[in-house]
Image 1: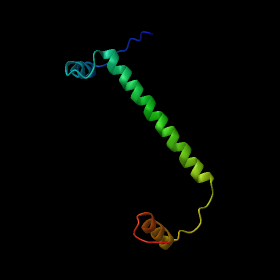
Image 2: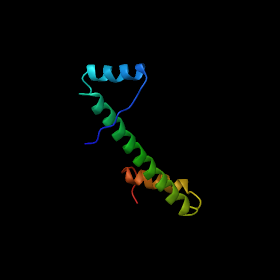
Image 3: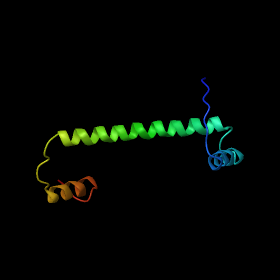
Length: 83
C-alpha cells in the first residue's frame, strides 16, 4: 500500500480525530480511504445518470402523452380494472 502525506488545518484534524474517538474509524487513514471510496462511488453514479440522460435525449421525441391510457394501464396493473 502506498503512503500519502497530507496537510489539513487544525479544525479538520480535530474533526478526523473526533471520528476516530467515536469509534467510527480506526485511524485517519481509514477515514480518508472511506472518503475516497465514497467520492469514487458518487462520481460513478453521476456518470451513469449523465449517460442515461444523454441516451434519453438522443432517443428522440417521445410524442404526445395519452394520460387516459397511462391511467388505465396503471389501474389495470394495480388490479383495479380488467382489460
